[in-house]
Amino acid sequence: MIRSKTTFLKLAVVTLGIIALLLCIYWLPGYAKNVAETNPDYAYLRYPVLIFVYITAVPFYMALYQALKLLHYIESKNAFSELAVESLKHIRYCAIAIIALYVIGVIFLWFQNDLNSSITMTGAIVIFATSAVAVFAAVLQELLKNALEIKSENDLTI
Image (cartoon, rainbow, N blue to C red; front, side, top):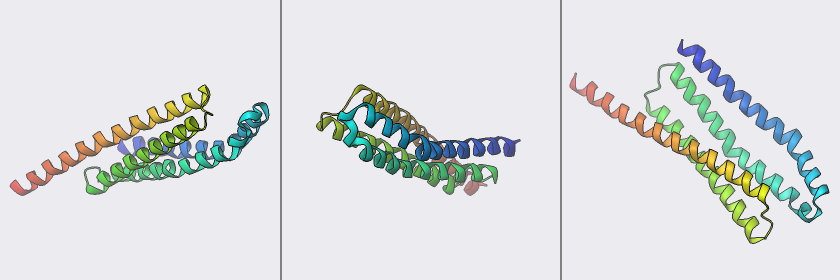
């Protein structure tokens, strides 16, 4: 039963990664070109924004890899292990890195007076969603740490 659930979650993580990769390769450059052509005032931001999105893809894919590792630990009955705690820690750090990058990007655009409403909304959505992932990973990490402490105490008393 656990194997089918983790397989579904692994498939979801891989699908998410493939969709994000396809969007970065095929859709995003065309969209950036279209925005640059329709808004010549923002044309100079085309490549910096593309580079920025590609840089933020690195911690995103690192977090997806750690999620796959965590699902593997759950599948192999090592959910309550230090390895699982480490994976959650890495996921949290990746989320914090994405948040920091987007905050820096929004501040940079604000100082350049190029912060329009669509960029602000996109940045806010990414920051909010990633914050939720970071908090969720931190809570799960603490729960797992507590469970490991209880498990080690029980092993010592028996």
